[in-house]
Image 1 (cartoon, one colour):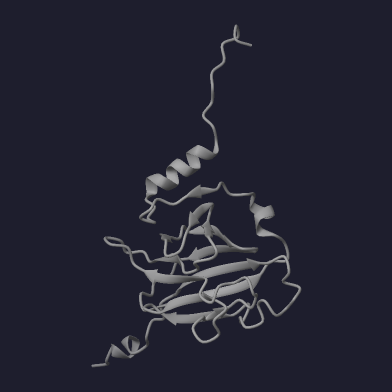
Image 2 (cartoon, rainbow, N blue to C red; image 1 turned 90 degrees about the horizontal axis):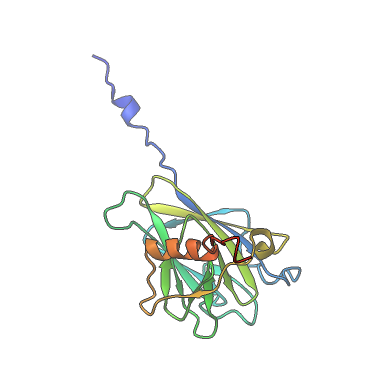
Length: 194
């Protein structure tokens, strides 16, 4: 009898969740700023790895060589929310000097928030457009960085500046109220009021 296990010997490759990061800085013509980041390359990491962005060349996986960037600017953590089969990322501000903005939400030092599927983060003069491409693997994920030739804020419009609650956590209703607060409700006007 022929064995059917030959087909089972082949490992099925699971797709990795990939965080695409498009970066912009007004002085990026000084190639030094992004010189230590392998651009246009998928950086694969283990699920438990914390990914650091900042100036520290020993700790940060993605080094930003500019004197206004903190030694540790922010971190990204891959995780799986409770009672969910999907994976996601959270971002945490590690800078005491520089506030981090996620779609206009202000993150102070040690505040963290879950990343939406697509969002803009800003700190100092840096702009980064992050987009999550979902995958199947729970063991690894990837980060892909590229430069934008144009300001990302101009491309997508200026986000509304709101502050984060003291606990640093946002829930889905907060995102809902943000989107609803950006557009004022329609107002009925009586023709006698005009």
